[in-house]
Length: 136
Image (cartoon, rainbow, N blue to C red; front, side, top):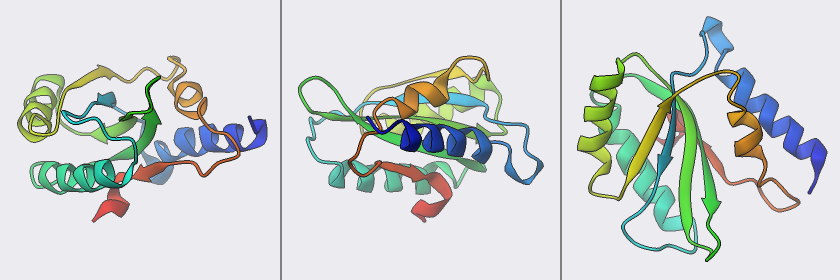
């Protein structure tokens, strides 16, 4: 594992949430797909479709990581900034993600180590992530 790249990516995650005077992230999200995808091409299209739909109802931004489970199937996790309270956020995610698969989310805690968790898969290969606002 390339420790320098991992540290740079963890810093990007941390700093992106605080740029432009923001207070940081609001939620940590984990998204699974109904289908088992081994490549990130189709899930990236699904992520873009989800983001376009969800951003119609609220301002949302953040960073999403593409990851693989033990069998090599792609799933996503990330950190997002969104002005909705937890109940409205849950309803919006249920409404917009249910056609793609399962989800869970937590309230962001800056001491949770999510930056470390998201960067633990960084190695000498290309880091697969998307900044949500770049999907449109």
